[in-house]
Structures are given as C-alpha cells and as structure tokens.
Image (cartoon, rainbow, N blue to C red; front, side, top):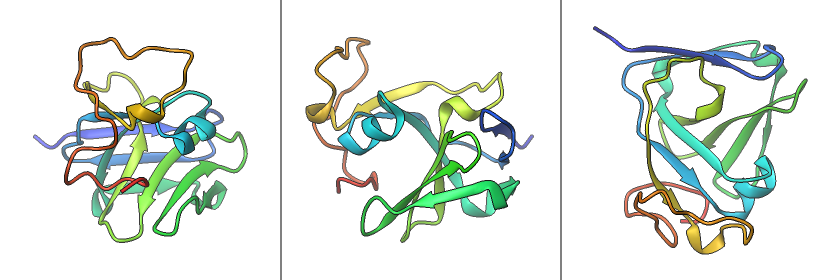
Length: 139
C-alpha cells in the first residue's frame, strides 16, 4: 500500500500531498535555517514527481544560496520547503505535515553552527557539518 501524506502552512493557503516513502527527518542547525525558523529546521523529503501543491500562487521562494531556494507561504510566512536546483526531490518541513506522520527524527546536521542557547542531547547522531551524500546548503 502506497504511503500518502498531507500538510499545509499555518493559514492553509498552501497545501501539499506527498505520495510514497519519505526520508527520515533531519534537524539542521545551520545559521540559515536558524535565521529562517527562529530555531532549527526539521525536514524530510519526497521525490518531486510525488509532490502535489495546492495554492501554489501563495507560495514564495527565496534564493538563500547559489544552488538552492527556500519556499514559504506568502500569506502567513510559514517555512515549508527547501529545494536544491540540481536535485529531483523537495525537502518539506516536518511541522507542516498533518498528524499522524509516522516520521522519526534521525540525526542532526551543522551542529558546529547551532545556537548557543540549547544543547543537542537526544542521543541521535550529530554531525559538525553533514554526512556524505546529503545535499544541503553548506555542502
């Protein structure tokens, strides 16, 4: 049976449906994610051909690096997506999914850049930058 997931921004102006298996959730502590979210960003991803958007005219994209962009709702400002230009998948913030998600946090990345007001002490793997093979803004 194929997995189906749905979610939305805070105001509901942008909704999405993701079909198929999602990647484990990764927590990114880089300065870009911290500045965009106010803390750290937790996201999974799905193949582009398995992602359907509703209210796409309300979605805004911000190019925060030379090879990726960040998607957010232009109405309520909810952080929703991260998309590398060269990849065929889109990262989706874990908090935007409707429950139950069935997702689990797997590891932390860019821990050397984390905020100085919290500790990462959940026992999950924590990388100073990112593990090999994971395409992120800092690679």
